[in-house]
Image (tube, rainbow, N blue to C red; front, side, top):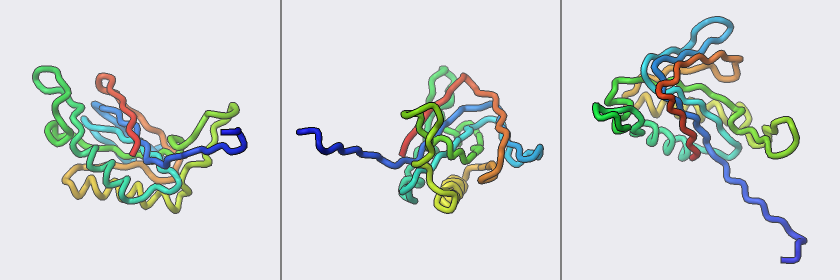
Length: 158
């Protein structure tokens, strides 16, 4: 290669930050709009070009993810087994990059008109699977409070 061409491959992704919680809530303008006890707080970042197939894959993974401890102290139980709930909060900053400069770039974040239906589809898919799902409010300034159980925090890209 003589250096005249640079190929950059960018894979779009639905990025999730999962936190196992004993409690979590989200407020908008001082009002609690979503609240759970034991369960998973799921922060969701949607990138340009993401689609329903990635959301379905994410919902399937969330539904069966074994991150709760059994009687032997091993992570062998999923959310249904412990009777937990999801708190799903959209967070476009997860699609940000700090690779260049000192200020994050959000060039790869999906525009709201593209991202909101995908976040809604993730919530609907989880509810269709029988889970209780609470949410934040899309495009709102939100205050998220949580008690991280463990702590257990995972990042998943789809």
